[in-house]
Image 1 (cartoon, rainbow, N blue to C red):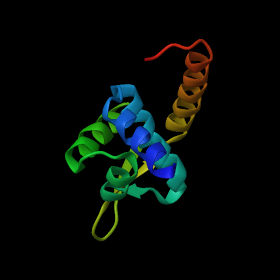
Image 2: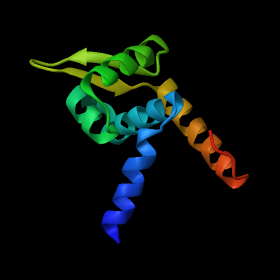
Image 3: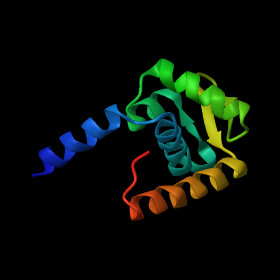
Image 4: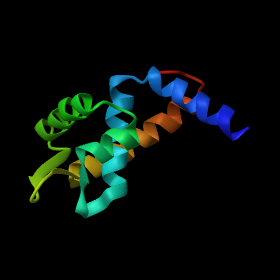
Length: 104
């Protein structure tokens, strides 16, 4: 049963919209909080390639939804206050869409 559910989740992630991908990345950043997340962690948890994460994170940085910093070895992405607000509003939008049985 769990395997079937996992397969359905993986299948649905194949067809994510651009906004769905961005929401997944922001969700990972939210989960990581102020310490932030490295690219490999975001890629793994959001089910994306390294290059897709770099591209999307740059878009999020440009929109000031995420900020980037470096530690000794890695580039770290941290969600901003603006990003938190955007993510929360996007979640509300998703709930609204689901309540009227629309797909986006």
